[in-house]
Image (cartoon, rainbow, N blue to C red; front, side, top):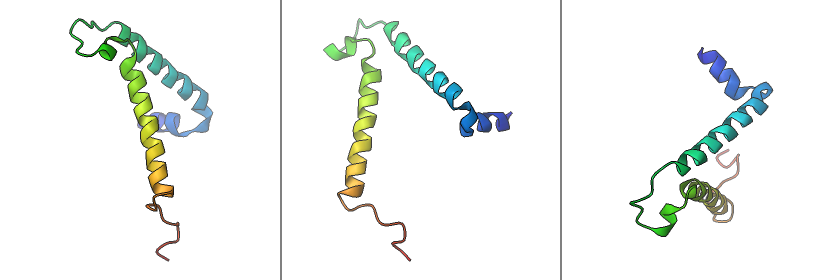
Length: 84
């Protein structure tokens, strides 16, 4: 069974099925966020359905760009043959 799971996530043959499965999971998560009661939300943006999904996505994008900037422009990244 584990071989089937590894093949599904590692083989390019299943790329379209994998992509559809991940998009379906994202849609289910956003739809589930509409079903959560929001009577005790402390801030205005906590009352918006889908806010946590958008906030998480934008935070990940920002984290990627900041780490790329620090690696390339900040001098943290070294050449592949640096220690040779």
